[in-house]
Length: 403
Image 1: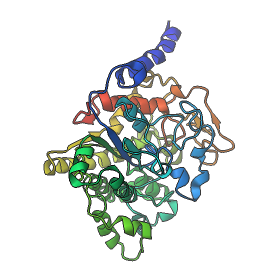
Image 2: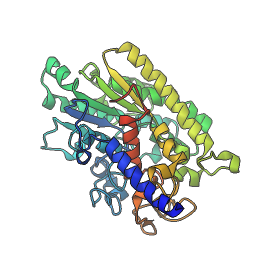
Image 3: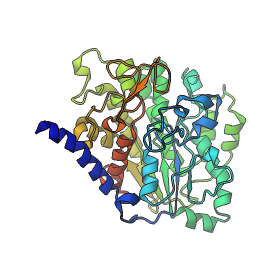
Image 4: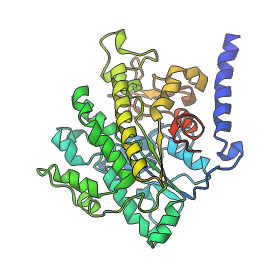
């Protein structure tokens, strides 16, 4: 009986998620909100291919097998086996999957585009030079640069203030998740949790600035680091005073950070000294507490923005809470292999080995990614992102509610 129950749970979970995401075509039903376009910013949790063409890391592992095996059946630049939260949101609202901006030349982008870049940060490179972590950066295409791309694209979407307000009032803006890498780079450089806590107000502020100011606040940050000369691209991106909300954006989703203490990379590289360092799900308490601290500060700043712009619908997406729901109850979501062990990796207690990471020699991939929440030690599987997307669309993890 128990064996039959174990086999039935994944099927029931998949059916529940599919029908809860009724906006996706194969489950039927129509989108409850008439978004005509969608624009997203962020890092590898949202990037659909920009990293692959943006830097000397063009041969990055996300461009190799087995990335993309589940849905696309080929690598697309997504840091997963398949679709991401942004993909499920686009499909839920009847929109096409958002093309990566750097691969969209000549395409009609009036229905949306993805500016997110894997490895991107909320802060600009001078911040990391100041804290001694610039050598850890994957990319200098930070949030401010992505917002600069948005400004460059705007004239092709609308050509007057009135038309832009009308156009963007029917658009959904996904601003993040971003900020996690700001802390990752600091931690992997040896910074302590206490060090990182001093960065939180600035990092969270950079995220909320993105919903209000696209560039001017970044120039101020460069002025705070006079010893560093920003690149011409970043200087150019700091010249405008345009605002997302002033442009007409009225629907903005701003996600918080995931529970980093449940990441097999952190569990492997920063193990606890004893059992008391772990919670009931097996995650590191201190790093999860830190992620919650960032999210609390972010929510406070978003609340201030709501008061300033009552005409805008600024929604906080609780990625942390959504992910912890399946970290604590993995079998209810079909994750029969648990929430912590990776599907694709190079061995060890969590199947994470930084010397044999997913996509390189010495690693292997599981036969059923949907049985895992953790894909490669840093990123999640399509099944886990599906669960988060469902929680955002239909569950209690968006405030105010998205639907």
